[in-house]
Amino acid sequence: MDSRRFERLVKEHKDAVYRQMVRVCEHREDAEDALAAALMNAFLAADQLSSEDAFRGWLATIGRRVCTRMRHHHAFAETLDYAEKKGLVADHAPEFDLQIMKRCVHDAVDQLPPTLGLVYRACELEERSLAEAAEELGISEAAAKSRLHRARQAVRTALDQSVCSTVAS
Image 1 (cartoon, rainbow, N blue to C red):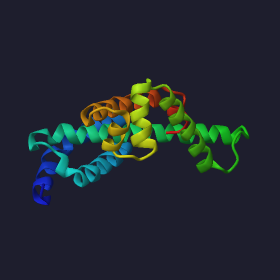
Image 2 (cartoon, one colour):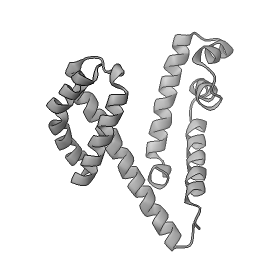
Image 3 (tube, helix red, strand yellow):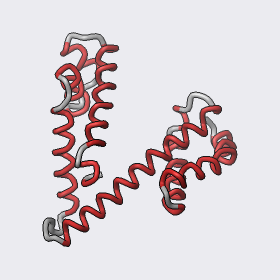
């Protein structure tokens, strides 16, 4: 999509999306930040937009995800402040965050059924291509792609529902 079309769509839909962001983010300042980040992400991924008619919903979805990440970040900062005040964590916040995230991801992957876990580990953790993983597992690429998609969804859901989502997001 060229920049003129993108700019036209932004002008047409940004106010409506901003109002949604105020409701989702619950603070005007956060909504402004979320909209700015959503616009940047949308511009960078504009070639993925299927039709101009879907722009408002697409931008709103990106904005909601930004708001969610912002809330998780705020929750992590509050948890880290509390832990530091209690003497549970020294000045090692980046290492603390990384250790927690690694543990949470590994726990989520360990919960996957074997059919999904094998594809997820091959593609996401071992960084093999989908074709390589499919061949190794003796399944079609379409089956591997479907399993990888379901595995990613399951990992996201497990991370969203775990204690880690409030501590390390």
